[in-house]
Image (spheres, rainbow, N blue to C red):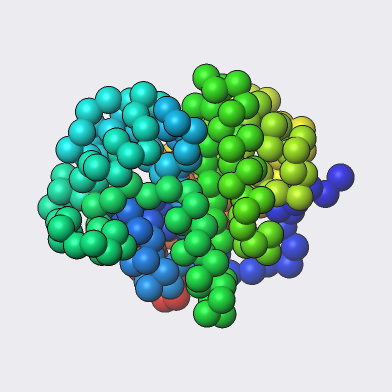
Length: 269
Ligand code: G3P
Ligand code: CA
């Protein structure tokens, strides 16, 4: 059985910007995503979490403490609380907060999934295809609410946007597939469990998402996953030695904090 995301003929490796071009701009900000697009990234990766009032925002950690000047769990804060925080100064960035144009806070504002989808739509309207790989973070705590809201948000946008959903939780991917089987799903793996060694994934999942550590220890994994009909999208690949390994093994996508450098290395291989 061929699932969405199965490899066809060999294509160049797709380069996906992890939390945007997060080496050059504060992660998960509009500025980081714009930079990734400018750098030539094929796709954008983002993590999504639900706010207390039910909005999906792009934040990696459970709490906002590391990446903003605020404190507390995303799930305990409302979107308006998050909008008042500064998500850029921890990285040395500032924006003119007094500006009436909220868009000028591109380096420091919290980013909603809605806004990120609009960015991708704007690119599509200008003739530039950009994939969006959305990771559901710790969705089991929310008993399906993250996936429900995600699908509601996606339904408000152009269905032609190339979106895929990623998760470490097979249950989360299952929920997405049950409601929207046309959306490709990526099963993220930090370690390679014995049951996945032969390239098998949870039922219905089309794409394997191993950590680079898995490929360093089990380079044969890529061939196994391909033999099962799965693409392989590897994270988070910043070291040139790892980029070379990925190219050698023929992975389908590299997820990286530094898309510009990875693209230029791949072009020279
Ligand atoms: O792209 C997958 C990767 O982002 C998973 O790890 O912790 O960076 O979300 P993390
Ligand atoms: Ca992620």
